[in-house]
Image 1 (cartoon, rainbow, N blue to C red):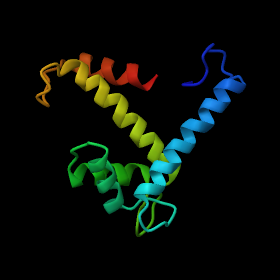
Image 2 (cartoon, rainbow, N blue to C red):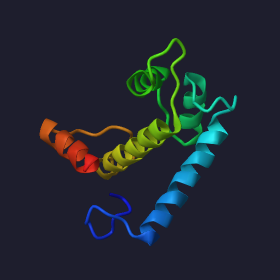
Image 3 (cartoon, rainbow, N blue to C red):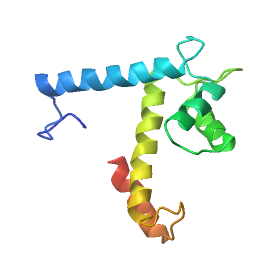
Length: 124
């Protein structure tokens, strides 16, 4: 959808080229954080990635993301596609939060419906 400028459900060659560049940029970032070159990002690597990207997230929240997005295994880790998904959702919801947090204090007061509206409009 991000590269479908006409909202036709299709992308042209320019949109496809932009999509490839977008994925390559995320792949480069992913490889930067995949310190052990395993092809996936572990909990510690994810924590470091969030920190270096400027997100001040608790280990508990990172663990929640890992539990939600990693494949079930004794040592859960995040693959590239899920890493992109997590980062895009974090970016989108952070942007929505900042629209409400005009004083940049890290707290906002929202009604439940305002919260749902904020989330739903970012998901579409």
